[in-house]
Image 1 (cartoon, rainbow, N blue to C red):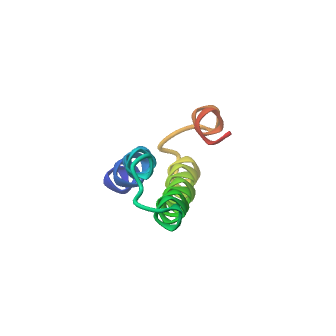
Image 2: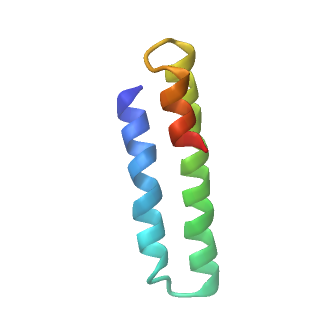
Amino acid sequence: MSKQLLRSGTAIGALIRESEFAQSKADFIGKMSISLKEANETAYWLSLLKNTGYINEKNVSKHTT
C-alpha cells in the first residue's frame, strides 16, 4: 500500500508540473484531469490505511481536506 500511495501521491505534482508546459489547451486539460484522478486515488489509499489502522483519523483528515 505504501508504494501505491507514494506513486499516486507524487504523480499529482509531476503531472501539474508537466501541465505548465502543455503543448495545447487539450494537453493541459488532459494532464490536469489525470492529476485529479491521481489525487482521488491517493485519497483512496489514505482511507484504506486509516480503515486498516495503519494511520489514524487525525492524520487522514489533515491530508484529505
